[in-house]
Every structure is written in C-alpha cells, then in structure tokens.
Length: 330
Image (cartoon, rainbow, N blue to C red; front, side, top):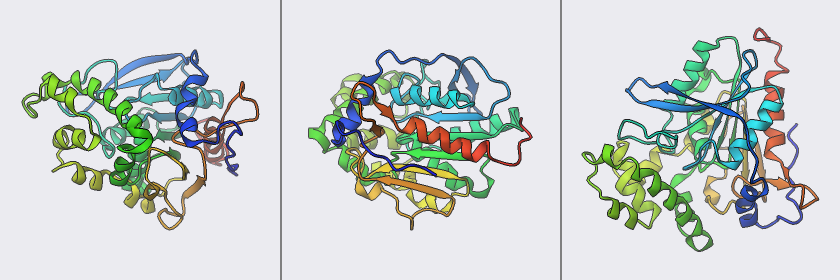
C-alpha cells in the first residue's frame, strides 16, 4: 500500500517544493564507481555503480532528468535509499551527460529508449537470475515509461517507478517556457547549451552552428528546433514532442509500475497528469494535489525534511521483488 503524500506544512508552495530540496543536503554523498559500456553504434554509455558492490542483490537502475547526472540531488538520494533496502544500484547517464564527451553527434532526448533497452538487456544477459527494477525522474521518467509501453509483455523489468514525467512534451514545453518568469527555462537552457557546447566539434557537419549562435538561443522550443530535433531524426520540435511523448504508451505497460505525479508541478502541463483511463491495469497511480517537480518533501520539522520519494519507491520495489515467490536469485 502506497501512502498518500502530505506536504510539509512549511513547504506547501509548488516552487518551494521544486527548488529547495537541492539545498537541504549540500554534503550528501554516495560512493560510486564509473564504468563505460560500449554501444552497438560505436559510442558508449557511462554508468555509475554504487559502492560497495553487491554481487547477489537485485539490481536497481536510476535514470536522471534533463541535464542531470550522478551529482543530481534526487539521484544520489534515491541511490542511497535503494542500496539501504538491499538493492545493487546503478545510474545510467544519458549520452552527453557523462563526465566524458560521447563520440557520435547524437546526444539524448525524452523519447530515446534505445540505450535504455540495450543496457537493461545487457544486465539481463550478465545477471540472468537477478531481478531488475528501474526508476526514472522527469525526462528519465518519460524515457522509462515509453520503454515500458514499447516492450509490453516482453519487458525484462520486475518493477518500475516513474516520477514527475512530462508525458505530454508539447504542452509541458509551453509551461516551462513561461513558468516563474521563465526562470526554469533559463536554468535548463543554460545547462543544455553548456552541455551541447562540448559536442560542437562532433555535430558541425550535421548542424553548422557556432558557439556564439548556440549561446544566443534563449527559448526551449528554439533549442529543440535547431538542435534536438535535427540531431535525432525529427522534422522539427513539434514532430519530436509528438513522437517522444510517453502518454500513448502508458496503456501498453505490462510491468508493475508506480507513477508519482503532482498536479501543481510548475514545470509540467496539467495535460501531462495521467488518469486511470490513460494507463494499464499494471500501473499504480499516485497523483497528489501538491508536491512540485521531483519535490515531495514532507515532515513536521523544517530541520529534518522527509524525502517521501526515498521511502515509497524502495518500499514499492521491495513489495514487487522480495515478496515474489520466485526467488531463484537468492
């Protein structure tokens, strides 16, 4: 049973829920080891394996959000919480979010499930008897949800959790471009442009854009039109948003999946809030009135905030994995 989220009395504002959690644990660390997994197209995926290694535990894959990485506060917190509950945890960096620049022009986007499918299949081949679960945040959640629907009954995951995902990319892009005086858009664009700047030598033949031209982009739609869409085979940003949105895939999910979403999310459209009519019978919906974007901070003491996500997601995975009667992996 997944408990209902109740926001902290001192954090009922959606922007506070979204912005403040990153400042609560400035010295929060998790031990990890970086590794590269070569991909079939001649590139690589950078992985961050939690330490110390547990060679027999069920595996948990963590997917970060837009321009996130192993240093993202929500990723570190979830990795630590999952490890504490008995999982061997690995974070998969999307291409160009790793410490080293990827080799190919392509980067990553909200609907790019190929690397995730490749990685999960790799894990299943390497550890055939160990259950695998996955949790995705924001963009990573959309990728995970789309992957679950695409794989349908053939999905090798034992369970999944999707948090604050932009299931409707077009309307969510519109919200980000306007919300909080465009502060969210500026924050994301600054990181996206800095990340893309590293790849300019690789993409110059495909997209002849200079550093100055890149830095002049001040609109998310424009960035996706000029870079994300052409780099990944889409006609334009709207074509990308339509084809990459996970909403149409939610009815095809055949894996036990927990979807967590807040109606007051300041970075996503209300159209991105899934209803029971949008999802399959295998999906557990936890839609709260409040919680912000990847926030969900509860608790009564402002000096001891409770990271609700780090309680309910590991508990859900434990119910799905450890209570399973098929325990050949033990």
